[in-house]
Structures are given as C-alpha cells and as structure tokens.
Amino acid sequence: MTGEVRRPVFLDADVLAAPMSRTVLILASLAGAGFVPRWSPLAEAEADRALRPGQTKVSDLRQRFAWGTTVLIDAAPSRILEMMTDTSETDRHIIAAAWQAGITVVVTRNVHDFGRADLDRLGMAAVHPDAFAAAILTSSTYRTTLDAMSAGRLRPPNTPESLHAALGVEHPRLFEAMRSVFPDVETRASHDSPPAEVFRGNRCVVCGQELTGPESLASGVCPECGKKSG
Image (cartoon, rainbow, N blue to C red):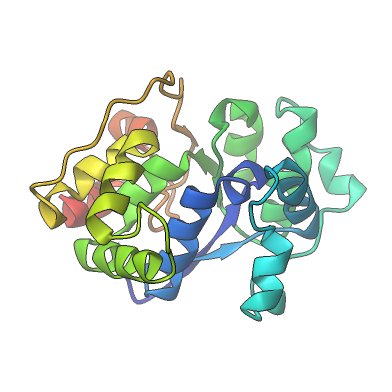
C-alpha cells in the first residue's frame, strides 16, 4: 500500500540475491510504494557471493544508480549479536543490524531462520518477499513497476504481461493480489515446494504497528491495513 509515511524495511541477502524479487521491491519503492529498502554491507557482500555467473551484483547496481548511503546501514556490533538466542547464527547479523537501525520488518526468503523469541522480544517481524509485496503494493504501483522492468529488458519476459506471468511462479500471492491488473494473464505452476512459513513476528509488515489478535499475528497485517488492502 502507498502511504504518506514510507517505512524502511531490511532486505535479507537471499532477497538481494534473487534478481526478480529484488528488482520488483526496489523499483516499487522508486515508484512510490509505502516503503524504502535498506540493507547492510555484510548482507550486500553475501548476496554478491551467492549470485550466479552473469547476474548483476548488488554492489554494481548500487554504484550504477548512485544509491550510495541511501540504502546502506551499519552492520551490528557484537553486543547486539550476543542478544540473539533462537535465530540462525548465519542470520543473526541481519536481524541485529535491522534492529540497530530501528527497522522492524525484515524481508527474507527464509522466514524460519529468524527466531520467534528474538522477533517478539525485539518487536520485529520477518516476512517472505511474496507476502510482503502482496500486502504493500497497490495496483497502480505494481503496473508502474512492471512498466519500468519491461523497459530495461531486451529478452523475454520483457513486457508487463509476461513479467506478471513469470512473477506468478515464485510470487503466487503477489500474482493473485494483482490479478485484476492483468486479468487475461495466467501463470504456470511452480515445481518448487511453497515456503513453510511466510511470516513471523509481532509487527504489521505494512505500517509497523504491533500486532495483537490471532488473525493479524498469523497474516502479518493489522486489521486497519487489511481493510485498506481488501
């Protein structure tokens, strides 16, 4: 959803290393979606190492488009890392860096790696990029994002419609949420198993407010934001 306040969210290394996911989120933010992406130098370095040959490095994109310090936040000091108890050791620097920067939402493809106790104690949430995009993007922002994506691609998928179909394979929630934008487009079924979890934590992924009711805690969206997106 587009709002007056654009909240920062932290992109995990696994999202930065997924070209389609990172492109949708970054371009949607530039198109005026209600969030701004942030990440740490360590997350960026991890993403660059994980990319396949030929894929553009995140560090190169940042320099090419002069994002500079607008996206980077400092890495977490050791004292914050030591506070983590049930988050995967390889992901503790992610949640700690986000918390240090005052960011309550981490967008990650591996929600299960972020401990429930750590998220609850720190007042944070971890959300899959598909669920996050489906919750926060408007039809208008989505169309603008796909127009921008198609303008920069020479090989298929290189039209808004074909990009929408391609996104549906790994982003089924986003595809369904934006079905009305391209009502005649269908996507193919994914051969990959869906993620076991798409949300953990106690913060609304749209507005950042604390979640209390069982339905909100399950979906990651507070009642007020749920009404606006419905």
